[in-house]
Length: 230
Length: 217
Image 1 (tube, one colour):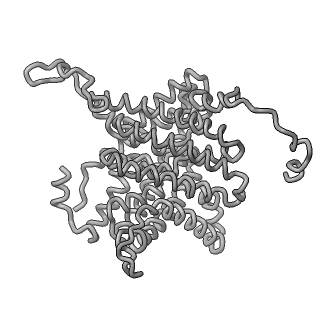
Image 2 (cartoon, each protein chain N blue to C red):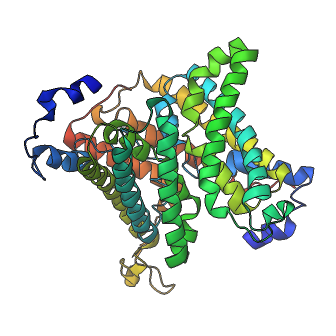
Image 3 (spheres, rainbow over the protein chains, first blue to last red):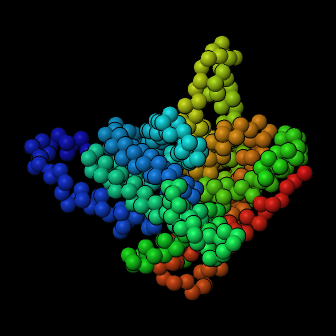
């Protein structure tokens, strides 16, 4: 390692890397579909389902994950040459839990209602496998700019699945979206007339989330052609 | 309905109260099936019953230890006014909770691993490889966070830790048994693996919801 750094070949000025070349583009776009962290890599599902009953808290959760993932990737990438490899997990966890503490205090201060609804799930971003997984697999081996893009791509890949699940759950379960009535009130039974529409209560419960995510994964894999053994 | 339950509830620290808490943590509010905690290792390690048993036992073990330990840390160090025994009654270190809990969990996992290695080789052979996985299992951290949020007593947090572990183990073992049977089933190609696991988990969660009306008096 030191020998290569000292050798004259590397000491020459490096060719200038493009700020947004092919590799950077791949770092952002791959996790959106082809290597989606939830649907294909099976990471970060722990917190994915609990917060998706309504769209509002889901959006807050997604913003928190995007911030934590980008920031932790950048910080870990900046520190990567200083972290001894045998204690790297502890260092990464410390970085991540400090960032999550910041997010949770900000939410407490400015969006108290939403932070109450999300309860422990903001704090549980610490053990979200995507964050630690990207720090370990990408940020430890790449520069800060590329790590930032990789964090952004993975966080958005995580966010769109959450948002899709949340939209279906909120519209199906309570007929609302962001607390606005989407299903026309005339469809519901009024006691006099009964047009026959009722909300699907299953959507609001835990099993509904599991079934929906199962179906979403099925559709995503059906289109992208990915299969695995049982 | 919640108000009704509160009105009838026995003293939470009595035997009846603790049994009720245990039943609730195992069946009604199963940490995996109702709160989705510990999904990652649940999905990864539920392919065979024997490994699921090993991981389940390790989770029960670690949860029973870490929740009370974190209770002591929260109530004697972090909580507002908790440091009055040091003569600092105005200090509020609650914001350090997350870092403390994760450090305690990582350290406890390490200590438990070393202790098992020293005293019981057979147990180590069974649990050894699963213990490092557990440090980042959200069920472990989640139980400590619920302990803080719900303001449990020491007895309650011990019972809560233990029975959350039982509930988690129950879910992963039943899932592993189903997945072993599923191997011979003809599942559509892109539904195999993750997709069908989710759908089966949804059905198990639905089955567990039937416990929700039960009350222990």
